[in-house]
Image 1 (cartoon, helix red, strand yellow):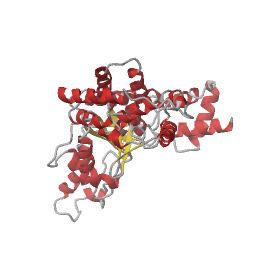
Image 2 (cartoon, rainbow, N blue to C red):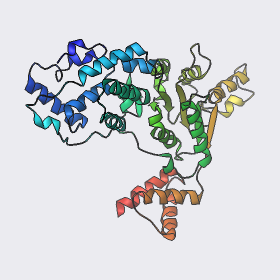
Image 3 (spheres, one colour):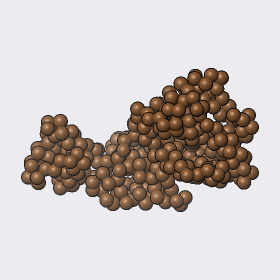
Length: 389
């Protein structure tokens, strides 16, 4: 193996599978990776593809930083490395490594698409261009593998992200249209607004945002969920996301509201509008709340006898945060018919169809003994019904 001649993919030099001191130890490590990653077939080649797709190199990071573009000279250097890497073959001693069947196959759609695109390619330039196209479409590493992330001083991929689709959200056609049009404009590089989804509990506000990420993952959309205490880190989070210029991110704040004594909202106000540093073009902030005005306000705040000298300033401060969201989408409790349609849809996904009379009787009985009509109550009824079968 002439890996010492690599130029932009020199991380392969540190991998004992490709630079082994012990052939058997390298084979053991490769089998371990195959089981962990779900690699099948020729797992030597599979791991090579996986490593190029998931470990950052100069090409993948340049594609990210430049919105999908790399210079011709860097492409030539990458072709040089691809020619070396794809001339490596697993030792004949381990024949089973060429027809490996893992316990659980890799289910990542971006990796599967990449493997398929490489199946019939032999020329190094074609293979290099296939990887560059992959970097443009999906990114590299965790950004390619995960749809959603949380913040823990760095981006941490959420492995078991809820697989909900827009078609699963019954009703709220107008709200979905507003949400998809705004997000579509954002993905197309057009002007788009930060969004506040507000209204009755359990009406699918959070589910709508999650469904967007599942619908538009292949177009480069990712979600980063942060908590209220992490708002003080919002500038750092945005700076990190700015480096992934070819991706589009929704920074998601779920069930957001503030008490008068909480000051975290000022970080959010500054990030959306008014700070020295502009909001990155590849980031929008979507928040859900049961409150139209995110900061708790009391009648005392509007009382003319309030001891504050400039009462109007206090009122303006409490409503200024929600005013910074360019698009505010209202969600209302579903009608009785919409509520029953939600239950029917959820049951049909489990291959169960109730007649109209039974559905109405059982569904409304459940509603009356719970917290009213909404999607959450409908899901709880479905869970109960399925559990009793």
